[in-house]
Length: 631
Image (tube, rainbow, N blue to C red; front, side):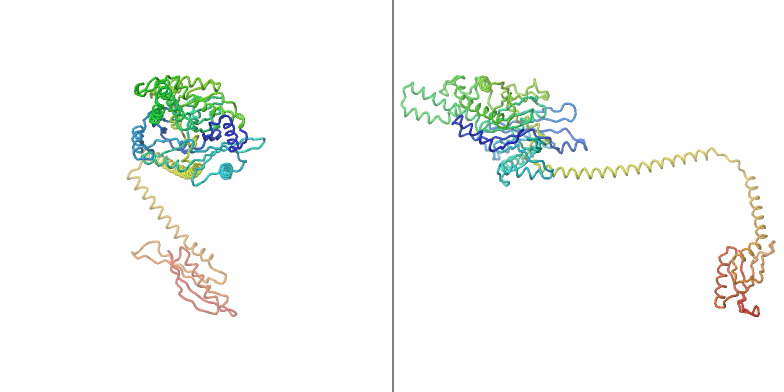
């Protein structure tokens, strides 16, 4: 869609409307454009990839001027995507304020009877479009972190609003190319905080917390986005005729691209009928030749009564039913006469629709509107539908979200038989199809979504670490278990081998083996005794340093035959001298004794003599005699 200025476009359109019809000066018009919202990442969609969740149930609550409309729909993750679980319309109690406790009690009882239980249920409701501004803007291509500031200041520049009194939110649509320049398309929403808080407080007092608040145009868009109603490829429009206001929405391929709210609707038709009744009574009075004063008094007294009668006559169009007789009302009017009374109001509404289409095609350069669907709180009168078709020049359809012949999601629920009654439930059905992933939510803003995204990212990180730890623990557990199984298998195999082994052992064999072992041990002792002198001389020669000379070695190895019970001591007597520096002779001898002490065959070295002596004419030596016990 090309770049445009919303405020200037609105002013141009208002000027065009005023020039066409001076009687429309009292209408307060608001033009806004909005493309199809891109899907946001909802908490539900993110979590379904980690944990299996139950099929969510959503209830759409539409509180009109005369009744409470409730729709219950379940969303399935497998098989049929949607299923209608219930629908209900409850007349509002008369003469009760929306802010009173009586209305809270009425809403609480109605929701409790319809919901069965409040846990696990999402509740969406609608806020009046007059309390919400929807702006479609295009900002330069910036980094993701800078989009919020760019959107805020762009909207702030084009549409001044007070942050304390208004709620601001936006939805990034994606990149668009305008005159060769890449920009980011954004839909911004500005709502009155007071009204949003009032609705939240109303439902919180009932014990049923709201999951979302949106506007009627986006509820109708849900019908197309979710496939509840077939999406029309051509550009189509939706006209909702309400009591105080009506709104015109234009959809391109199922996405909302423009919405306009006008101050005209059912009440203006009722006023037209009331004025027609007064004129009708004036004619009757003139025919009966009554005085002017009495006629004026009669008309003045009947003013409020005529409004009540006018509403009854309007709702009886096409049905032919009325709770009061002609004698009670004093009025005899045919359907054609009643339709002629509301025809000026209908024509003014048609002109508003035509001007909206012209604004969309000429100023916003949109495609030509080729279809229109209407819904209203009054029964559809065939001549009025035909008149609208004739004036607009194309087919007029009725929004029927509960048509059992076209909608495959109704299940076992029996919708109302009247198409007029079913058409009033279109907004409620759209509310029950709402989800944060594709429906703008005034109580779940972009900031809330960013916080939720951060929390979800942290939770995912924790969950990933937990999975890694679990995987490591599982791997260790598997490795330990596998090792234990392998060792058990080895033990089992060895047990089987032991059980199969049968050695030929008896007492005689053991005695023979003992004799052989004793004989071998005795032979080893005799051999060791024979080799002991050689071992002694070898060890002494290896350990004796150059400055020590051995003069004699005497060994007492005992007798080979034991003659008494006493153990004979075996020892070696070493006679030698220490030469060299007199200052280190003592140290050399001590070092030599320590070396001998470390040998495994000697124990308890004992110095029997240690005395300096003259060994030759030139040198003196340290003469020593050592006694070494043998093991």
